[in-house]
Length: 91
Image 1 (cartoon, one colour):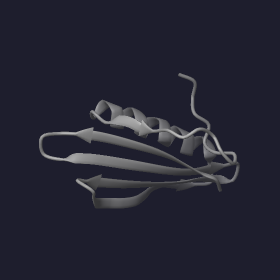
Image 2 (cartoon, one colour):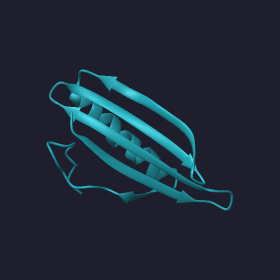
Image 3 (cartoon, one colour):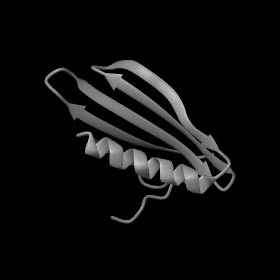
Image 4 (tube, one colour):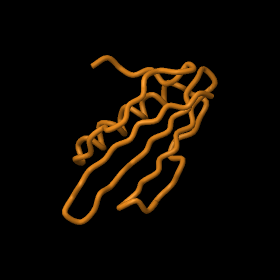
């Protein structure tokens, strides 16, 4: 499965937080890994979504993006499509 990555960042008086979302989505399914860092230290590393439905994987990525932005994160890295990567919704 090809992997695409989105990186979100927010700065607060307490810390700098980064959330990295790595999504592998193709016709056979989806696996999504999320790494959350605070001041450069990993505080969680999980696979919150895995399954055979690629549509559910795309939905998870979209909902996660909206939630991070609502929490004050900004998208700092959004690569283009490569190797059949996750398609980005039109803006």
